[in-house]
Image 1 (cartoon, rainbow, N blue to C red):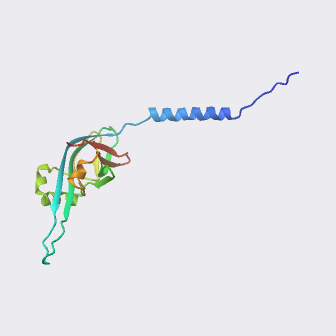
Image 2 (image 1 turned 90 degrees about the horizontal axis):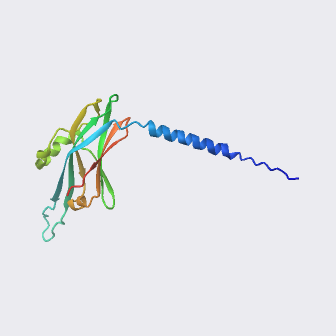
Image 3 (image 1 turned 45 degrees about the vertical axis):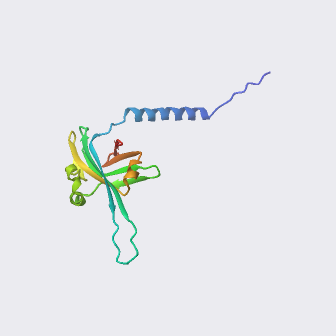
Amino acid sequence: MSEETRSYYPWKPIVLAVIVVSAAIAAYVYFARVPDPYSAKLVSVNVYPIHRNLTSPTTVEGVGGENETYDQVIVLADVRITNVSNKVPLYLSDMSANVDLPDETQRSSAVSASDFDKLFIVYPDLKQYQKPMLQRDLTVQPGQSVEGLMIFSYQMSQQQWQSATAMNINVDFIHQKPLVIPVPKSK
């Protein structure tokens, strides 16, 4: 007489349940995804390198001062942001930009409203790029577009700037994921 062996695999229903639940979650994420409520256009980007020799003559005879230089790159980005949603206003919170260099990433917040006009006084050559500032804490209603200038400052030389591999402008909103605007590399 042969003995009949019956095997029971208690893990099979658990595996089947995990697969069904995972498929349901994936379908929900894929089909219920809400598109971004904004679009952006980079109207213009201007780069202004600054190189200053800060060496001052010394009063000590025979001992010269060391050469000291100041390098900075100012980036002026004119951006248009459009609220493509038909229901939800956008609440602009903050703007920043990242520059990827070969050995590091430098981040700069957009110049504040109190410093915006001062920059054009200190560097009169920038007047040709002056436009209205893109304000923080701004509400963009559905269907509305806003355009404005953002200014970023990096403590680096022009040679370091030219070695940059990428630049991205980040616009932060309240209750929305950040808008990332890639800046094409200038030649």
